[in-house]
Amino acid sequence: MPFFYIDHYYWLLVVPALLIAAVAQWNVSSAFRKYSRVGNARGYTGYQVARFILDSNGLHHVRIERVAGSLTDHFDPSKSVVRLSDAVYSSTSVAAIGVAAHECGHAIQHNVGYFPIKIRTAIVPITQIGSTLAFPLAIIGLIMGAPMLVSAGIILFSIVVVFQLVTLPVEFNASARALRTLTDDHILEEGEEYRGAKKMLTAAGLTYVAALLTSLAQLLRLILLANRRND
Image (cartoon, rainbow, N blue to C red; front, side, top):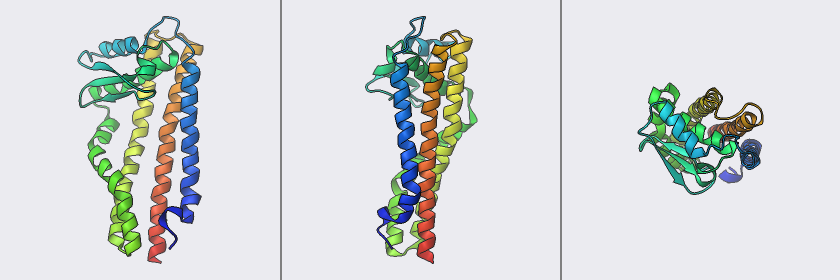
């Protein structure tokens, strides 16, 4: 058997998926840079928009914190805090407004019990185990000719794929909630401001699609390697 990391399945399946993921990541970074130069007419900052959205949805208890970096924004449900990056927190750009609203969308999802996010939260611990152990188990199993270890690795990595699959509706729903709020509450003006925020969030959503494709390619690769070993 060829060395695991340079088998032809890797070049045939994984490399194209990684290239797609790289393009998606470049696209979101490019969109963020572009629309970080477009300010909103009302002069709202990312923090102000986030606080308004949270308070409007009765989430007065959810705190907003500033974190270092760019595109490091996230919602931490365990501590009820929306963390906004340096590039978003005090920025008045439409990119920053879109990102801040998106993270608040996740806070709202948790508050209303959005079903996909419940599933994602429930399988996080298993996913963490799977992402750590799946490939080592599969590799050892392939080298030692131990089908049970290979199968265990495939099952664990399948859970990672399920997690990423469930992540798609969670992310796209959060963006949909964000865009709806930005227009309904007249935070952004129609036209360039709204289009900029939408393009930014769409580009971000596509990175999750690319991540899923990459994981599916890796899973298929494991299955093909296991079948080839059995043959």
